[in-house]
Amino acid sequence: MSRYRAILILALALVFLAALAPLALAQIEFTPLEPLPGTGGIDAPPCTPGEKGCKANLSTYLRGLYNLGIGLAGLFLVFAIVRGGFELMFTDSILGKLEGKKIILQALGGAVIVYSSYLLLNTFNPQLARDLDLSLKFPRPGLVAEDTQLLSTYAITQKQWQDFQVADAARTQRLTARIAEAKAEAVSLRAQAAATTDEEKKAILLATAAQRERQTTDLELARDAGGGERRVSLNALRSQTRAQLNEALTAAGTEIPKINSAFETARGALANEPAEVAESHFDQMKRIGAAEQNLAIGIIENPPLKSFYGPGGISNILDHDTWKGEIKARMDAIMNESRMRANALVTLNSLPTTPEEVRRRIPALIQLVKTQAGNDIKDIKTVCREVPALKQTCKEHIPDIQPAD
Image (cartoon, rainbow, N blue to C red):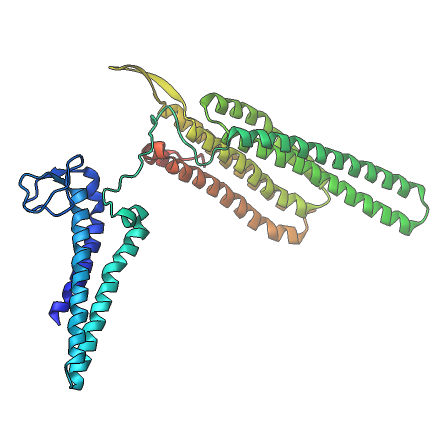
């Protein structure tokens, strides 16, 4: 029984060779005590058995050893099947025939194990299974200086940015047209209601006019707040240089107040709907949080640089203090917005005109606002650690950046 374990041991040895494959990257040359057929140095002819002083390297030696193992496995398979066949043909005892079948089945099972190593190698890397090349010569990607260029997994291309600008302009124009139509229809309905003496008809006209006015509020919020948040976010994510990021930060200084103003205007129009007013504070937190979060991502991927005078001359390096301060400013902005939304909800809860069902909803909204702010800040820290060129810097500096309470 033990002699048939040789095939299994050989299979495990082949898998072990595959595990050693990464070591071949070193391309270490050495002189083997006994060369294997088909092995040799990187630029040397193949070694032959008995050749003295033949140079080999780990890559080609493992390949030769693998080929030799596959060949021996085939010989063992033929020998075992022949031996099992003789047992079946030339014995009359039942036990002998069972032993012959057992030998053949074990040989076939061992062959499946051995040759399934090809499938394993093909799974790891098709290059291994194709030509048994254990050198794993993968193309090496070019590297860039840490402080001069960062390749973003979040940034959008210039073409995508141009497409967005066209789509955003068309969307704004479409929403503006719909707002004008809804406003005009609401004015017309109220005029008809004022002119009629039929109380039932007047009530229907006024209710329809109120619906059109509510539609106007929703459309204005989508155009001004939603569009503003998208412009801030995509403007930050499309930044490929520090100059572009500075432009995005300047634009955000104009867009974010417009987002807040849009929500204040909407809440003024929804004064008679306290439930909608309460929900609008959470919506505002989500919009402002998303904008500030994407600005922080833009800062992470386009950090401020400062000149450094070293032995090799002037070079640009990461300005850690400014970088940390800019990221902290965005995190503080998120927390400030969270506090303002929570305080506004507390104020709404204290008003005597607020319905009881809205009062019951407000604590949950306050918790949602705080959770949203916490998640936005957590995502900023996570993204920082995902930027390859800043991974170590983020580990060292981001944990000590804490937003204001």
